[in-house]
Image (cartoon, rainbow, N blue to C red; front, side, top):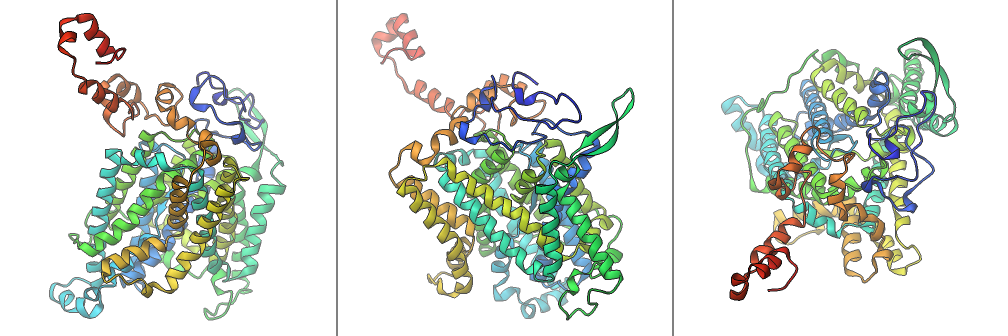
Length: 610
């Protein structure tokens, strides 16, 4: 795997893979000493475990996309007025699973190439609610139209959401292909990313509380199990049979460390099932603790079909409106602004160099493409990076690209095999809530750890950190409770402002980015010296044969084509080459230079002035 020591294969099967602190001769792996931690990954991006364990590790990551699709399906069907139709909820769930898996697979193979999980973006529910708040989408207004052509009102609403999502996602695709996000990267630093990630983790933990409230005992048990497995039993290895091609032998396998999430989920579900069979948990839906039973959603498993194949425009031709497009575009642009910081965070959690501009541009374009496909199929909810996967990476020490591709395939198959996806509906809410508190707590820790890159003795940085965190945690809560207070006289503008100010990660990142770029401060004080080293050395990184962001099979071909240096999504894209060539073209040699070949050659070489 080249000259990088971190790409060497492990010496034996029963030893943990240790990542060297000295990254060796590969230029894109040079990292500041402060970034080196004692906790290293067992399986890095290009060092997969045995294929036998891919489904086991991948399932843990796939659960994130599956749980996100579950909540998105419930919220979407309620918004379009089909909450009481189980067959519609089942279809939307299958669509969300299929599009989430497809988005993850495209992103890992052709997009940013980071080990990540793409899932249904619940933030689009805000845009859907804003779009359908217009009186023309009420049941009374749609009843006459629905009776005239035999179309259900929920299908009319769904087609409106489809069209606006496709248009907004198409806009994001064009922005990614044009490379405008590379310009935004110049203004992104630790004081932009760290407050946003920290606020996001705190906000997402708040969404777990209603799930835990269904039965705090079951939720606490789930939390207890994953903490015991990932902290106290992390060094315990159990013997497992193995075959090395010549003979059978026993290998010592860190079962609890690599499968903490899956074991905690299985153990909690088993306890809930036993309590359900023995009727220890109340069967009355009005009593507290009923949602901890494993048979609450059993009808969803029976009603789901064995196979479901998504087809474009299955619900009819999509429609578009100005207000709907603005609502969808607002959420889309909010996600676009956060893309550089999210990718930086994922790269740091996976122990990879910061992504270069061409990888960020491709990731943005693939996000737009997958969102448009989701709109065509009827999923009506674009995908977003689930940063919760960083919590699982920190717990399991597995960041292999092969494992995350397996997770994407599992999620995609869950959308095609109806019974497969319906099985996960049976997981009780308290179990999901308890496990979510731990993984999302790791997201908070990831954001807090980024603050060490800046000078915490600087009053400038402390003020920016405190103010951005306070605004991100408090302002969205106030806006949610006082949305009517935003009144500019333009209803569309009011909706845009409410959506922006209701997104905690956007508020923290925006405030932190604005103050960090306006307030005077040295690069060392702002933590930019080590943060941008790998980005500024992009041209060198592209030439490294072990570049983790290169496209498979075609990077060498693209690097030989000089024209590809101008395309922002190409691995050979050079952000400086265009300006250099333009400067050369603008030079007009004097009459003396035209008559003197030696001077003319020196001008072309850039060694003398005109």
